[in-house]
Image 1 (cartoon, rainbow, N blue to C red):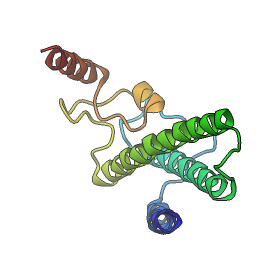
Image 2: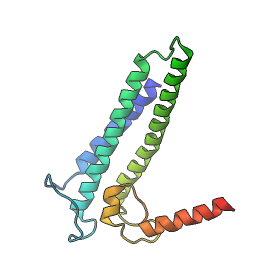
Image 3: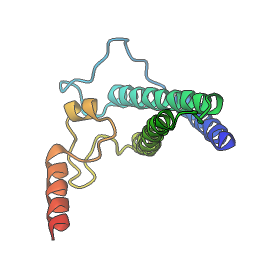
Image 4: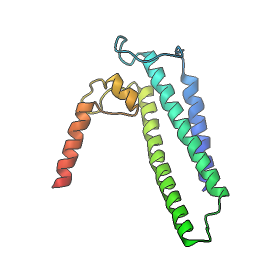
Length: 160
């Protein structure tokens, strides 16, 4: 398991160097995208690229801590109740890491969309996704309206 995590870290480190090397726009420290600017101008793209990359690094660091604790902590508790509690805690932690693993693929996809010039635009309608939505969810691929339609259609198909 450790070798898989280390291999992922090596691949992600290389991708990180590649992304960092493509950064050509200097951002002021207090920069926030504004509706007064041209939508998805180089400054906005760089802002979201940095946010996504920082988010990914944070997730990978947390996964590394989890792996270290998992390797160093004994999982066998003498008391059955303590063992059940410990296993339940680890189950929750591992499910969280699995969700974060899936989130990393969405972050990578958003970073690819930035490189391809597709970031910030709805994959359904082609309309710009609001800056507020992108601030709240930088991996968003649809406008709020398109997402709501998608969820309504999903609910209807589930109810059938």
